[in-house]
Length: 295
Image (cartoon, rainbow, N blue to C red; front, top):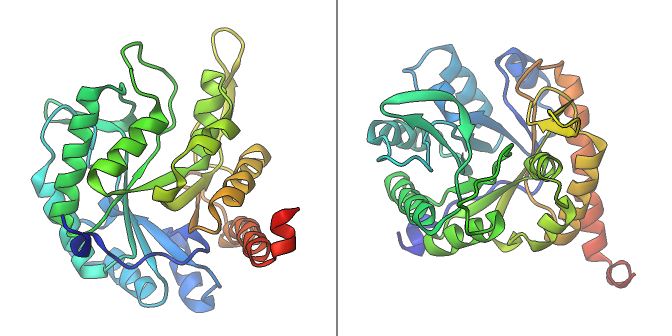
């Protein structure tokens, strides 16, 4: 793809929410002050009906982020061209300001798995993922963002650090990155690494969007903390602290609050978005004040 084909409008550097059907009426009636809404692409691949009427009404009022969960970018098999065609139709219909997918795989021998599974970070995987990202961007006619995963295992045959792998994919293909700060925390705790050091090394020049979410916590077989990327609670304080650290480095970026399970009242989600918006506002003030930057 050339630069002109990859270019697209971008989301505002504000807080956004995932769009939930139970909230659409209240959103349209009250029009809360939010930066954008995000939807999962696969929920809108049917023809017409109430879901599309609702999404069209939201898209007429707010910027839109389209987030895919079914491309299986990392799978050791060709991409599903029919799925790409459906994605392109959605993008042509709604003109979202952002499209993103996961660095993961979820298909095997024609079957679809109900999870986003991790990859070994090797040269072979890098070539495959970069080729798939190129194919997606060519098919969709726009730049995509690739999200860092939450992981629970590490592969012995990995030869590339995850940060370097993502950087190489972005450099080779021209795609952007979606930095999921909750995923960073989940993976760091599970693998006994430093989440702040991860952020300090991350190639933030590629980042076009940030995700925040809540995690569940349990203990593994050895009695150590094990975090689960659950998307069913408020953003925890340690993830909020990591987010503040991230924004201090990147400056304000579009930030999504993900809450997909046990969805609460809209007012609860708006409060979570307001917390993120306060961090973004503080970053704008800090960057505008030369004395604060030197402090």
